[in-house]
Structure formats: C-alpha cells, structure tokens
Image (cartoon, rainbow, N blue to C red; front, side, top):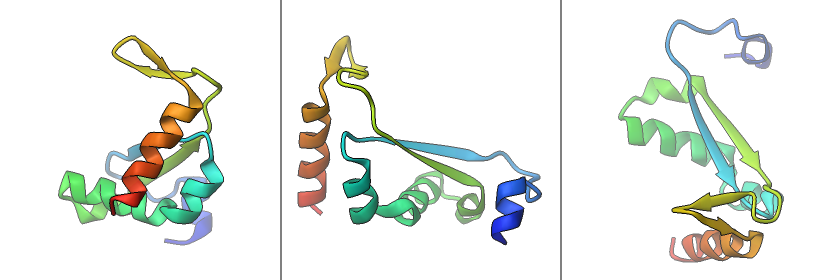
Length: 90
C-alpha cells in the first residue's frame, strides 16, 4: 500500500483497528518500540495478519493526571514507570 493510498483512505473494505499508546515521553517510546511493533501486536492479538494494513497507531502524550484506571488519576511519572518496567522486562 502506498503512502498516498494510506493518507487518502483509498484502501478499505474492512474495519480498521486503532491502538493508542499513552506515554509522558512519546519520542522515547516511539524510538524503543515503534509504530511497526505496535501494529504487529494489534494484528497478533486479533489473530488477523491483514489487520496490519488497517491499523492506526496513535502515540499520545497526556497532560499530567490526564489518564486513569479504576478512579485513580495517573501522573505522567506513574505512566513512565510502568512503560519503563515493561520495556525492561522484554
């Protein structure tokens, strides 16, 4: 698929997938993990290799306390600690 096809949305016919990665340091995560690996993870989790061609990856740098789980607002430091621990365990 060409960049032009991707940017103009001319390749379609099946439902797209989206993956969002929250990180206080988007550049570090993008360099270490990369959009390609995140796309691979989505396709593998769905068990559908064709999903690679329809997966949108969004790297997001949330504002301080801008995300949360179970009523707890995570700080950017909380998110960074979890991301670094996950990367270190690979």
